[in-house]
Image (cartoon, rainbow, N blue to C red):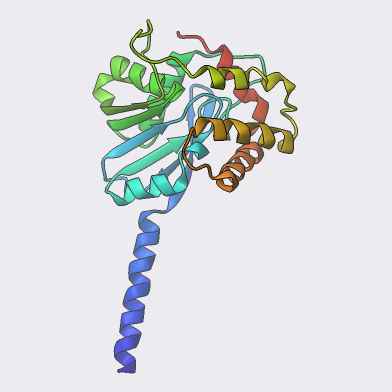
Length: 234
């Protein structure tokens, strides 16, 4: 009986170990066109790929690790990454934006090249949605599908698409009063913004604070994120 229980325990540990390896997060730096792009992958590289493209001013951390793991457990190879000027990717002096949105699109394709992936499902939010749209036009053979969130069309606006809520615009008009070099000042401000964005849904303040602090401390130069505000369409 003891021997049987021992084998059951060993088998259980093997299963857990395999599952952990399956969802293991791996960091990889892609070097392309004189810059470095920080990426992380989840799952088996042999599976269909999903490229998660984040919005302006935020890093890959805004694609929750648990979310990426869940996608990988559904049979996908998941990649999230930092755009230029956020996280651990190449950053420029605040006020300097020597690239445009087409360059950011080329970066996304370079990431696929770096992983030797022919094509991927692009999932983009906000600026990431625009990057994904451009990729589907300029590199149609590299895009399996598009999933777009909080993003408008690339080019002339569609008048049927609702504009951003004015309360959000009003809130961000106060950004100039924040000390962006002070962690607590940044956290206090961005938590308010995150709660506003959550609308009437339950807001997890503790989770939001943890994310913002991780974002602040992980960045090569946190305030370089504002270079995205000067981004041109290419």
